Structures are given as C-alpha cells and as structure tokens.
Length: 383
Image (cartoon, rainbow, N blue to C red; front, side, top):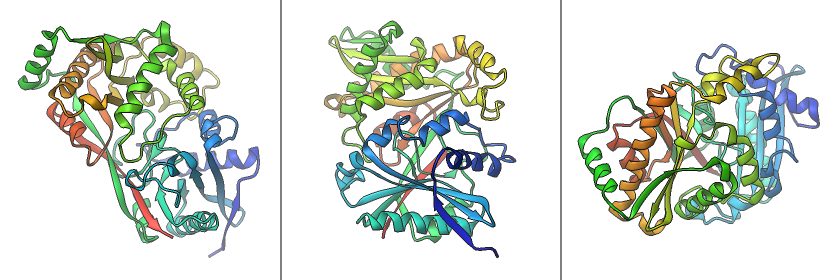
C-alpha cells in the first residue's frame, strides 16, 4: 500500500482541504449534518476563533498518493492546563481533536503524529478527542450513530472507537445527551413541585430580554461560571469568547426559550434552549449560497422544528445541595416545554451534554422521562 505522509496545514488552501475532507467521507452517512463551511473554516483560523488566543494549535493533513485521506489537530489549551488534575487539567496535559480518517491505518498514524507533537512540547498526558475546546465538540460519539446530532453536537464514524482504543487510550469521562417527548405533561410529582414553586413568593421565573442582550448574557455567564466551576472539564470563558459566542448564537436565541430564575430578587439559575438548527442545515450542503440564506432568514423569524436542545443549565453553587435547585430547574423546563410545543411545533427535547457522574442533572433529566440517546467519550493516555 502507498505510504502515508502527514504534513502541517499551511495556508488557506490547506484549511479548505481540511474542511472538505469531512464532506467527502460522510457524503453517504444519513445521520451526518453538514455544518456551514464558512463556520468550520472560522473555527480553525487564527484571528477568527478566540480559542487561539489561549491555545497553541497545530493542524495536520494525511495524504496517500497525493490525496488527502485524513486530518487531526494537536493543541494545548493554556486555560485548561490551569485547571486542577481532578477537573481534567494540569500543566502536563494536551489534546488532539478534529480527527477524520479514510481508514484505520490513517487514523492510527494521525494519532501517533499528534502524540509526538504534544510530547515534543514536554507534555505527558493526553485527553482526546476535544475539537478543539470543551465548549465546542468534545468527545467521540460511541452510542447514537443512527440519528442526526442536534445543533453544536458532533458526529463521527462508528469505527473510530476501535482506532482510538487500539492506540492505547482508555475512557476518562462519558458525556451524555437525554431525549424526551415534550408533547406530554411531566409526571405528577414534577407537576406538584412546579405548582409549589409557583406559590412561593421568593421565586420568580422570567424570560430573558433580548433588547438587553449584553446585560442578560453577563447574568447567565455569571451563573454558569459559578455553577460549573467545580465540574470536570470546566474552562472559563474569556471576554473575547463571550463576545464571539454572543455574535454567533444571537440569531437562535429566542426570549421564551431562555429563562432566568430569581430567588429573593437575585439571579440564581438559568436554562438555555435552542431550536435545532441542524434540521435546517441538513439540506444546505454546507453553504448558504445561492438561495439558502433566504431560507435561513425566513426560518429564523419564527422557526418550526421537531427538536429543541437544552445545551446549558445551571444553578448557583449555594443552592445546589437544596431542594430549591431541582424546583427551579423543573419550573424552567416546564415553561420552556410549553412554549416549545405551542409556539414552535416541537415534539422532542434533548438535554445535554451531561457528565456521566453529574447525579443532580441526570436525576432531573430522568425524572422528566428523559433517556440517554447519545454518548460521547473522552479518552486519556500517558505518552
């Protein structure tokens, strides 16, 4: 067989080849949703993605006979390294991600190359795949290949699990999503908890005010940073990343789908829900041209979707061990469920990802009749 050559990405043409490979490899996969190529190029381009401001990123292409047959990143996130080893961080930790390979031989060669690059930086531990930030698409899909991912969730070939484990990697942490039928009312116990909360004068559940977008975003991020600060894999957002995420996500933020819970007049919890943009992107082929941009603008005015995704939810730490925490969560879930069905035509919800050992969030998801539909695994290895 022709030898595999691995070389660094250098310039615009290589970045285009890096993105285009995925479109070729998944062309016949009915569960794959092609993201917009311009968005994908922006994520791997310094100056466009603020992740590069606190990370060293190397991108590589694998070629066989002059043809691109694989890709990978090797990167070091300095903010992640500052987190404790108990949270997955540490100064000895590096990552690889964005793996795509035409076959197992290519995949193994790419992983070995990424490890060598990280080892050359003096690192001795790898968490992977992380593509490229924990806030983007972490983990390898190991369960749920038979149905499309929701917006900002990853998808990969089933065979990659064997490639990664064959390279000596062992599971570090599983991240799971839960799906549920939102057309039916939640179980009676949940309804009683919600009704009790509605009688509590200390509690106020409100929609966000999009006309005060920056202020509301700051409120939510303050809760998020407090609620998630002890979680495995947590990396704080930088100011530049907050601005970047706000600009990117604002078009799919709808006031009745994002809730803030206040206790005694102070913000104490939030829940963010997005219409599943992937349902629209599935037929675009990775481009808004020539007329897909019109379809997208019309859709965004008032989207009708099958699925709503809950990517983020948080309760401030001072309340996390109290009954009030789950009460606030159930109230926000119920109010958003009603709006999702009545105003957007949704029938299905997806919550996550949720860490496998986050018992509080798992319990909430299971109590509203959620069941695991996808599992993403982050692996680790000493190098």
